[in-house]
Structures are given as C-alpha cells and as structure tokens.
Image (tube, rainbow, N blue to C red):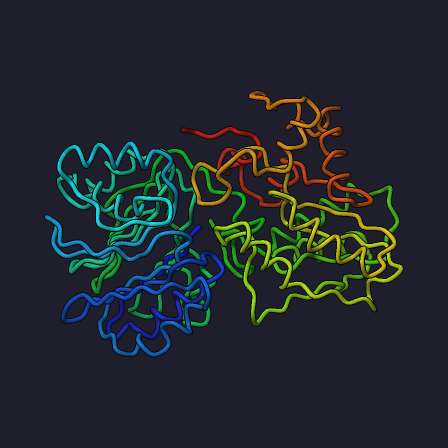
Length: 466
C-alpha cells in the first residue's frame, strides 16, 4: 500500500505538502516523491529504501514554490509520473494494485503507446494508470474508463492547472479523506496527516467518487459507486493509530479487537500481556483491559532505525528488519506466562524466528500468541501485499494436512470446523508456542463497527464484489 497527500493553498503550499507526505512514511518503503505547481511543474523523486523521506527531501523541498502540490510514499513504483498529455500538463500519484496490468499494457502498446517508466516488476503501474486515463474524452471520463478497465483497485491524485483531481477507487478498498484549514484544502490517504498540519476532517470520500479541489473550493464531479468494500486490514495493521477511515478510528478498532480476543480466552492463566511493536500494541492494550492482566513490554522496538518488516519487498530485507528492530528485555520475560498479541500471521517466519524465539531464549515460561484477524487464506488482489498463496502460513498448514494444495478451502475458513482446528494446531507447532488463537471474521467485523457488506475480507474469505 502507498500513501498519498495533496494540498491546495491560498499561499505557498510546500511546507504543508512536505510534512503531509512524511506522515505517510509507514505505508511504503521504496520511493518518495512530490510535485508542485507554481510558475510551472516541479517534480522530484528519491529512493527511500535505505533512508527516510525527510532526510532525502529536507533540503530540496525548500527550493519548490507553488500553491498546489501532490506527493506519495510509494510501496513499489517511482512516482509522481509527469505527462504532457492531450489534457495538458499533469502529474499523477496512485495507490492500489492492478492484477491485469500486463494485459492492459500490451493492449496499449498495440495501439502505438509507449512506456518509459519501469519498476522492479516491469511496467510502472502509475504510468499505466496515466496512459489509461488518457484514453478518455476528458480527465473525468478517462478516470471512469480506467476504473472499468482494471482488475484490482486504484485511488489517485492528479495535479493539473485546474486543481487537484482526487478519486477513490470504485469499490473503496483504499481510503481518501478531505481536510480543511480555513481556505486551504488537503486530501490524504491517512487522516493522521491532518492533525499537526492544523487541518480538520471535512469529509470522507465515497467509492468511485471524483472531486476537483482548487482555490475556489471543492467540487464533486463524479458521484459514488453503489458497492463499498473498504479494506479491513487497514484498521488491523496498515493504518496509523490516530487515523480515521470512513469515520472509524484505527486505535479504537485495535483495542476492541483485543477485547474480543480476551473474551474468548477463558481457559489460560497468564502473567502479562504484550504486543508486537508497533501495530500489535493496541490489540494487546485491549486484551489487557478486558482480561485485567498487566500490559508490559518484553519486546521493545528500536524506533530510530527500523520501520515495518511487512512492507519491504524482499524476504531478506524483511527478515533483517524483523530481527534487528525488536530488542528483548529479559528482566520482564524470564519465568513469565506471556500473551503476545499481533495483527496477523502472513508467512509466520518473522513471528517464529524474531519474536517468539526471543521470548523463549530469554526465559519465558509460556508463550500464548493471539492474532487480531483470521488466518490469511488468499493473496490480496487490490493492494500491494502478499502475492502468492505459497507465502501464507495457513496454506502451508493445509498442504501439510492434505498432502497437496486445495482449491476449495471453505472448511478451513470456518473457525468452528475440525479442519480449522487441525490447521491451527499445525501452525502452533510450526511457531513453537504454547497456544495460538486467531480472531474470528465476525468478531473482527464487530470490532471495526461497520456493516460486513461494506468491508473487504477477501484475504480471509475469498469473497469480493468483482
């Protein structure tokens, strides 16, 4: 997942843009970019895989000047993309994933359209989106045609002389929120970017909605799509704790997830509750409040040097970050029965090798793992995350039990079934923990507090509207 920020100001917007983009650093690890429109377009992109956005842009952003700008923290592609198109000069940033990117790019190349930007996986998806939009009769028509063409999801910001065009993907998998500061406007993936920039949340985008923001204010140019499927995982893991998505606060959802996990734990005795930093912390706080057990920190993240281990694209980099970022505190761990809460188990290797092992190595008496979402069963089709069934711990467990891969895993999805129990037993043994329990789909939905039909649970159930 990538993070986007845009701002329209009566005065110079650059400092606000710089900090607004920076508040999305937790969403991407590959590239940071910003574009500003003043006397003309100024654009800059840096590789942030080995350093933070701020350090790469701290000096150069001061050379920018203008009243409108957009930026991105990108999980994969170099952005923003600049185009001198039939609609004029434009810069575009995107957030999402396109499963049929190869098919779409080949179709465009057969029409004589060339691509000049490439990512580690091939065609730059943001450039592809820009080329697809250019097939429309207008920017709005092009965005709508792009929505219809792609298999996946894309939300976007387009910086043009008319203002900033902002569009949330047609099923609403990825969020966009509008903020206001007097006569200034901003749009962001994470509403937490507004707070210290003195913006107040004006409203939340609806799926498929397209809005034009400029000095005259806010203009809706495309109404919402009928189906809404916001990604549930944003509340469980990807979102920043102070953000609100569709008016629901991330930290509060995670605390409620912890409450539900503790309510189902009536058969274990523990001495303390802990969370895997950072996203497991609020789940653990909720568990501790419900269970009346003390919340403590047996594992502390070395915040200055390491980000998230889920987002880097290579397994070697993920493992290195996971190993180095958590420092165990033996004084708290030794001899204790510990409940350790985490947001999810994707591959399981990091939890086993760099979290659980550190607890055992420092003298834990028992380790009870509690996961704030159900077992991940399907690679995400809509956001850049897991790309292969083979990566998923639950699928490996099913393969061990069945002797081969299964196309229909319905029985393993049902948390009340015997096969589900056997699958969890395999993962428990693989992790080497005392007990393991996952959140149910129902409890997770209740914790989020929105109707189930408005939440995407594809990675757990395989069900989606497309």
